[in-house]
Length: 267
Image (cartoon, rainbow, N blue to C red; front, side):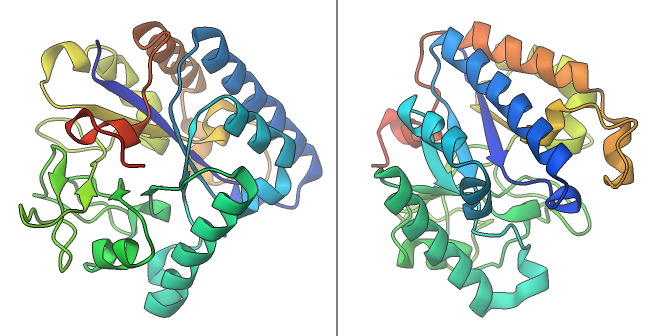
C-alpha cells in the first residue's frame, strides 16, 4: 500500500468569493474532482471551511455521503496573524460545531489557513475536542508555514509548542510533507511545480507523504481577472495528473488522515 495521502483544503477562493461566474466554475471543477475520487473508490480527508459549506451545500453533502473525512479549516479562512488568539479560537470552536451539525459526522482533524498557527495550537484544539492537527510543515515561508526544523513524521505534539514532539502528549500532529534539502511544502501553489517529484516520493521515503490542494488549484487562472497574481503561473495540468496518480495508487482504499496514527482511527 502506498503511503501517499492527498488531502484537500476546501475553501471558497477569497479574491473571487463574490464572483458568481467564478463560483459556478469552481463548483463544476470540484464536482469533477469528487467524481475522480468516486470512480477510484478512494476516501480521503477534506479540510472544509464553513463558508464553503454555506456556498456549496449540495457538493458538501456529496462529500459526506461518499464517506470522506470532514475536518475543519475554520469558518471563514481568516489566518491567525490577522485575527489573533480570541477570534482564532472562536473559529476553531464554531467550525467544529457547525461541520458536525451539518454533516452528522464527528470532526476530528484541523488544518489552519495558510499554515499560520500559534504555539499553543494543540492545547486549543484539544480543548475543543479535536484529536489531531495537520497544519505543520517543516519549512519557513513568510506569512505562511513557520516550522523549520519541526519533525517530518507523525508525532505526539506538545501542548505548549505544537511544532515540538512530546511523547507524553496524546494529541497527534500529522505534518505536511516538504521537499528534501530546500524544503517546500507539497501543497497549494508549490504542488503543481513539484508534483513530478511527488509521484515518486512514496517509493523512496518511509514516512507517510501528506500533500494538499484546493478546488481552485484545478482551474486554469492564466486569463482570470481578479485572482492572485501567482495563481496565473500554476501548472494546472500537473495538479490533475497528481489527482489521477493518487487515485491509481490508492484505488479502493481508505486514505483518510484519521486512520494514520498507528493505523488507528481518531474517531
